[in-house]
Length: 420
Image 1 (cartoon, rainbow, N blue to C red):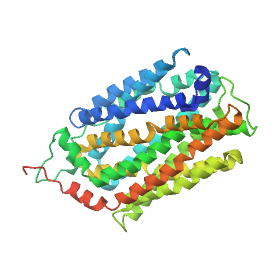
Image 2 (image 1 turned 180 degrees about the horizontal axis):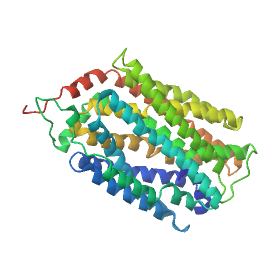
Image 3 (image 1 turned 90 degrees about the vertical axis):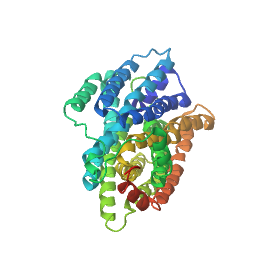
């Protein structure tokens, strides 16, 4: 959606606030459905749940591309329904990986899984922008980027290739077996797990920044080029195509580099301190902040410098993805992991990217003094500076996580259910 946002703004005649609402509606749906799938994922067949969710996801995305221009609310509705598939998959998939692998191998498998987030997102920008430009119609970007065909392939792979492991079997100790507790008891235990809670707030900052950039970066780069005279103003079917293409390529490369480097640095640092994971996450956020700030400030002066700083900022930001997931899996007992994933999704999106795209849009609208190219660019520029400050706050939460990580990990590894 963000890869063709300027076209969508022109097609429906909407401002920045309503544009940001597209992402917010999707994230809110995803966020509120996550606990439902977390509950189901800890108790029922996970492959079936994910298969149904992905099928629904693909069909709704296709349907959204046929929205008439008089009915913007229909596009908002379909964006909300897309959250069903996202919630079903992202809540449950990491728990299957956790039940298939342990320790170092689990970290490697999680890093491969989390490559898909930036790589898939980046490829979406690239494919969507180019298809929209070739077809001179932004609708085709949605039809090609997420199609029933790709969804069907994913469902078939899930049903016939992926194994459904027993929860916690790979970590089971001979003296006892794990069993489910009530959902309220699960939530109470998670709320007392400081490493889980603090790392969730740290990841919330990652979600805030990622969500803001995902929606607004191509539009911001396009407005900067128009303001400096490098590009012509928006013409329907040709808005921000090259910016989306470049940003997509950057997202793919930085995602791979960030996730891989984060895992490698953490693995080497673990030999020196058991607090390596939260420290690497903190470093990633704290290092990303100044580069994102420079990228936003330099947009009007040098396009090349802007892309270089975005590249560095996104690389450091991406160091968190696999490590945060690994932290959750080793500080939470196996029978509570889907619930923990869901709870982390709710918090990180509620306070993170559920509101950040809309907030950036509203602040941009409020700062804009006129509809000139100068103020279309300047207002969004000032609004996006908020991302750097949020990144610093997130780094602080990960530093706090480092204080509790050893005790919480030992507690989870030596957990003995009541009655044993």
